[in-house]
Amino acid sequence: MPDKKIKILIIEDDKEIAAIEKDFLEISGFEVVIENDGLEGQRQALSGDYSLIILDLMLPRKDGMTICREIRNKIDIPILMVTAKLEDNDKIRGLGFGADDYIVKPFSPTELVARVKSHLARYKRLTSLSDNLQMNDDIDFGWLRINKSSHRVYLNENEITLTQKEYELLFLLASNLDIVFSKERLYDKIWGENKYGDIKTVAVHINRLREKIEKNPAEPIHLQTVWGAGYRFLE
Image (cartoon, rainbow, N blue to C red):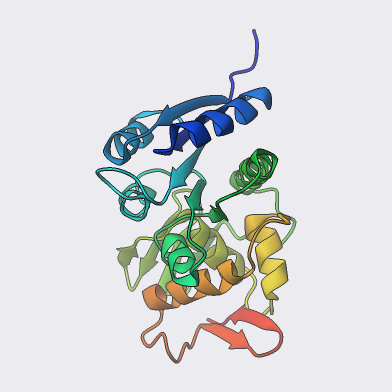
C-alpha cells in the first residue's frame, strides 16, 4: 500500500500564483488543496487533515493575520505566511500571531518548496523529541509548570496559551537552566537550518514569551538576555 501523501493547504487569492505553487509542490510529492477566499480557507484549515498551511496576507473576506490568530490555538502545524509587503511590522505581527515563518513576494517556487520541506522536517524532528539536548519529562518550578505529554503550560496554576514555537522555545530553555543559547543556536534548534529564514524570529518569540510569563516583561527575571551572547532561563 503506498504511503499517504502529506497534505498542504494553500490559502491564496491570486489563482495564478496558487496554481504555480500547487504544481511545484505536487511535483515534490505533496497533496495540495487551494482556497482563494479567506473565510473558506479558514474553514478548510480547521476541517482538513493538513500538515502545513501556506497563508497569504491579503485575502478577500478575511485577512491572513486574522486567520492565523484564530486558528493557531486550534491546530498544531507549521504556518508559512506569504506577504507582498517588506515592512518589519507585518513580519513581527505575523510571527506574533503564530506564524512559523514568512516568505515575501515575489519568490521562486523552488524557494517555497525548500521552505515547506524544511518546516515539515523540523516539525517531525521536534514532535518525535529527537533533540540531543536535555529535555525533561515535565518541568515544575512551582510558579511555572510545563506538561510535556499534553504540551500545556501553567503559570501560577492558570493555564496559558502558547503557539507551538513559543512552547518549543520555552521548553528548550527551561529544560536547560542557566545555559546561554545564542540566537543562531535557538534558531537552528527550533526553526531548523533554513537558509531562507530570518533570525529576528527568535527575538520576536522571546518578547512574546516574556509578555506571557514575566510579571514585568520590560525587566524580565526568568527569561534573560545575556548581552552579546544570547538568552538564558533562570528559575
